[in-house]
Structure formats: structure tokens, C-alpha cells
Image 1 (cartoon, helix red, strand yellow):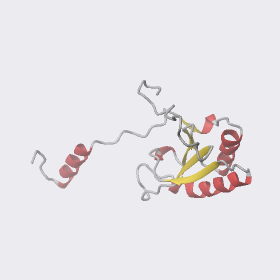
Image 2 (spheres, rainbow, N blue to C red):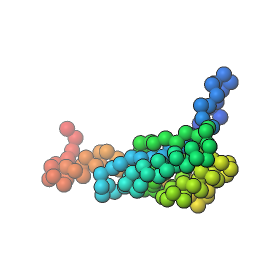
Image 3 (cartoon, one colour):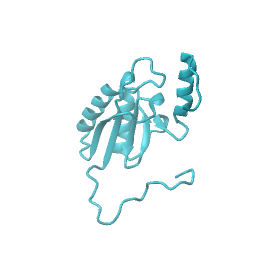
Image 4 (cartoon, rainbow, N blue to C red):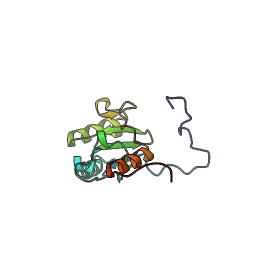
Length: 148
């Protein structure tokens, strides 16, 4: 990987069965409660975009491509998010035009859509450690902390 840690690329081995699909597209359709601080892709219209992407892929004759709904892909702040494998390229698709552009450029022509790509710079904010959250909750309720 770019940070020097071992990656998963090149894991295919002799004797592995061939891939079932040429490309596998996951569209996040996770829904969180309204007002959640991270938002959710479903609240941003991902379900309709997934349906549109499936229909357009069929119209384009992309028989080796599977478009699937996914649960949370953990990039909610940047959604609706889509990831395409085997390349592992992430996109933010907000409109039907974005979907058309990704299908044409990435899946038909083998290129990319740089303006829609999510990169290593698009990361969710770090999660609070559980212990700090528990202590803060006790403080808010007026309880004393400390070890049990």
C-alpha cells in the first residue's frame, strides 16, 4: 500500500477459479437516522441511483458487470459512495449524469472519472475511543467515574 503496509493486491493464486464477474460494483444504500452527524448514502439518494445504474448497465450490455447494493461502506460523509472491484476505485455519485459518466468511462472504456473519485484524502473523521465516550456520558449524567 502507499503507506508501506502490506496490501491485498496480487492475492490470486494458480488454481483459483476465474472471477465470476469482470467488475463488481457496490453502491452504498445504508440508512442512518435523520440528522445523524455522519449522514447516510440512502438519505442522499443512493437507492434510486443504484436502481438507475443497474438499468443503465443492462441497457449498455455490460453482461460481465454486477451492480449490488451494499451496507455501510464507511465513507458516509462523502456519499453516495460506489466502489468498483477488482480495481478498488471509489466514486461519489450524486446524479444520474454521474452514474452515466462512471459507467461509460470506467466500465465501458476502462478509464476513470477523476472529478468523482474518492481518494486517500477523503477519510472519515477518527472515531472517539469507547472509554472516553463512556466517561463523557457518566459526566453528563452527573455520575462519578473511576475504576470499578
